[in-house]
Length: 127
Image (cartoon, helix red, strand yellow):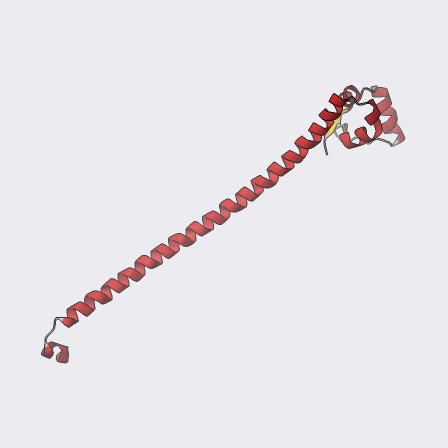
């Protein structure tokens, strides 16, 4: 929810600050700890006072807030995806190292096999 100051609300909605304070005293409007008012409540109460341009400003404020929340959500998703990419890269490195080790073991077995083939009959029998 977008929040604006009492002065800004008076200007945007073409009403006096005294009127806003009266609505706050009567409980029709609430202000937060920073003294700001919710634009949704203002539009609900004073939409007839709003010109088209001011109404689009209020809508733009709401859209900006929604956009900001969407951007924060996207940033969180990006961080999660970066973490997943890092984990996958670590797995790839592990599998590459394992593949290199297996190739080395295979090469050693092939070398041992070739040297045993070159022995004569007596060498094969007596080791």
